[in-house]
Image (tube, rainbow, N blue to C red; front, side):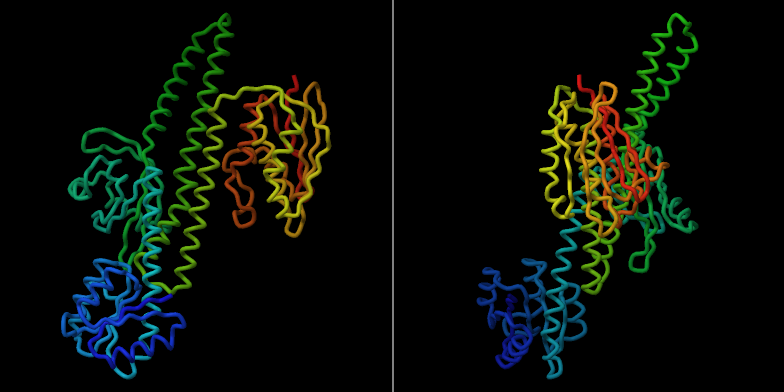
Length: 503
């Protein structure tokens, strides 16, 4: 319900205002204010969400009322409805946060309700936008991503605290005399690019003479008719140090291998195995760094872009809703990606005890977990019992099977109801678990790639996802000392298999 304070010495004017408001709003509560004591009581009670005030009152002015209300309740719309104000008063009132200024006249009374409605809508959108910006800044700070904006002269306009901490400075003023990032040079480069955006890895020297490596993502944008440079910066010093150490270690190993003789062949094999593990570990680290600097940057850049538009431009309500929805979708996308990355990381690092597992129990639990999706897609899942016991880890095996079955339920042609068949067979003293579907299938050339991190064969609009599910499947199979594969053709469904030990 709309609760309005009407502040006016003239009883007739108040009556006209109240009449017009009640014509427009079906549910409205109006409180009339005629002196300072009534206003003080109303401000203390805070039972209103709109204020309509005259400018010239016996006991104060509308400008003083405006400042008092905005100081106490910044998001409360204040509309000045007066016949005694001037252009100077209107300008001063707007500077103090006035939401609208309407001159008293017979023709303007009918306009007042619409002015109130528009002011309430703008205030609501402004509050939502500011709350969203606060959440965005909090997310960027949690991710330890610095953000900044600079003008065409290389002067920094704003930044977050992470940016200052990464550069080892207290405030932006310290950068004006010594621009560590050389923003002016980047600005001139971007001006001559068809797509004014760059992603770089650079080394910086901070004021305390220490060096750091960072990824720098910069984009040339136009805000209120002025070109500005927006940037994201992230510390990758640890990754760079690991790369240097890996290169040094590889060099040492190569020199040792050259010096070894045939008698040390067994030692060389052990060293090669260590080297392979180091390379794999660094590839995982590079993959994670890539996801933060690239896959997370895309939705974050979208959130930042639309948040900036909402904050700095007056838009139609429909366009505002569209931009807010896009921000929410990209925030959810970033959250899903972080969750999947954490699952993949835990699978890579955690200790994994293996024991004899009842495969039927694992499959039954997976189907219980996926029951809402199965019902939603009207899917049929057939399990050919009994399923044998295998050597494995219950939690990891659950993850592996769940990801394969989830894909089988998702990657089907439109209007096709998924059919999934789960069975097992004994092959060369091992158990091969088959998960077969009637989905869209996968061409031969993609069948190895799909098990890599961030591999997606379809757009997010066609089949939403993060491209990590099957990477978790392969990583889980590796931790179980098992193998995983696929037999598939486009349009003919897929047959995933997991080959597990049973003794």
